[in-house]
Image 1: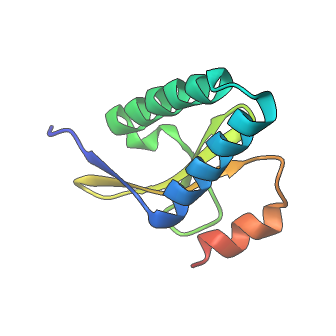
Image 2: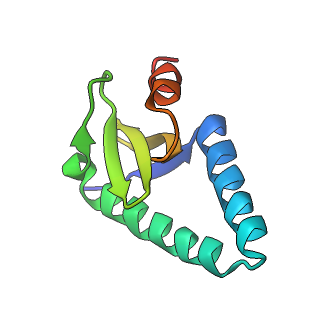
Length: 102
């Protein structure tokens, strides 16, 4: 089976960037942000190997891959994984629902 490619939506890219920036500014260091980047890569690698690994959500074809305080929301097709959101689980879940319904 061919390896699936990963496509981050503009929304997910923006969310990831903002979260990494927040932690860099808050901690006055890139150490935690760098650890998050490694965790994100590891989780994406797992999703690529097994797209069914994420927990199904109530939203059409969307799965959640939890990473402690963060979650990756994605959809899988035959050839691609579409990351639709990178979510800080401390945020208001109503915002996430609106985002996933787009």
